Length: 139
Image (cartoon, rainbow, N blue to C red; front, side):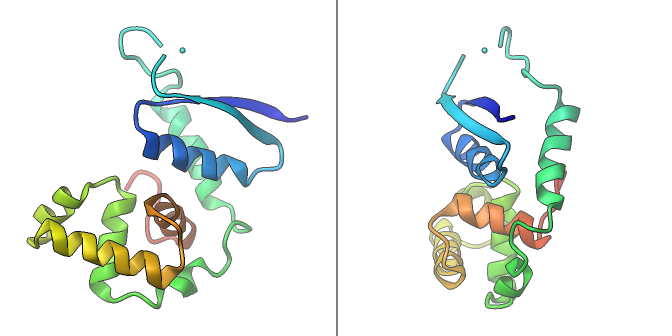
């Protein structure tokens, strides 16, 4: 039995992350996406607790990327720190502020991490951070 899922979130990055996580499951098919919609008065379709459990379930799976932690070894300490902050959802500006660096320097660290880890974009960077255990659901 295949579970058909429609992703709805106003942030494309969030939708892409969930799509990528769900695509790894054989029994789930993402059949569409929406940038807005499916909820009234700004409430969530799923309770925060259910959302957290879904993320934890996928983040705990060992078969997703067994070499993820080893791949992170290619990063400098600062690059690992930046990847962790990206995975926590911070923007380049927020990362720069947190680490007391310029936004351009934050962007450079992200670009180097993407290249070293051979991932396509920030979304894959976030997924790798979760798969490696660098970041756990809930922070």
